[in-house]
Length: 320
Image (cartoon, rainbow, N blue to C red; front, side, top):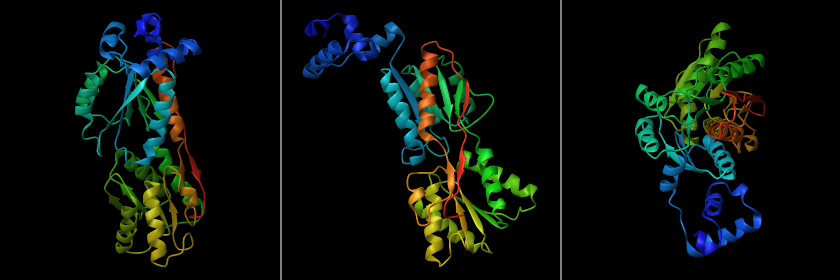
């Protein structure tokens, strides 16, 4: 390839691995030759020589869950700028496939690893402890991450939603939540505040993960079958909350007059339902960007912030 392009082998290597180090004219010329010839570099051989594979692996529970898509997109975009590709794997709910995924991924020698959550099996933790690569966990918070962490406190999210609803005069509550570890932490945070205020008669309806619109409608129907109508419902996702909203309206309930609803994540539709959904906003693109910066910093030997708490914000809209 170097001979065809009339440049040195190191220049071709930089075009693939460090394009920012190549002059614009040379970069465009080499890329045209690559496109014309269909050349694909042997990254395995290059990785063995340089100890760099130029890819980062990312594991999320499900690609169908919009909550994770923006974080993965911003992670991919930032890594691309520095010449890295992302290999994506899905672990399921619960993280049932994480062990086998990690074995397959680590055998391919990624330069870094992006993990969703902080809950891992003992076997996975042992593998990660000896992997000797930068690892960033996201979407959670702990004082003792495996390596680095970018996330927020799910317990504090639940507590903040409870304080928010109690502050608006609500005294009867329901929870519709997906069967997911982080959603359960939010629920427990929510219940802890209500318990302190002696408002602990709270009905919970669990639904399978990943959640969807239909499960939200069915969840409210089941909640109503359990007895008295709650005045406020906290949902573990905006998709569930949207389903609850439509089911409430189908049953002739006024929102928020008869029933207040709060979701989680502030997905793109949340501000555009009728009425708009109150929810908890998480800066999902920021999670991906900060995770990428953490990985790149560790790969390049720069000092990085070990734990980044991006926080959250309760968004009050029409459903409350």
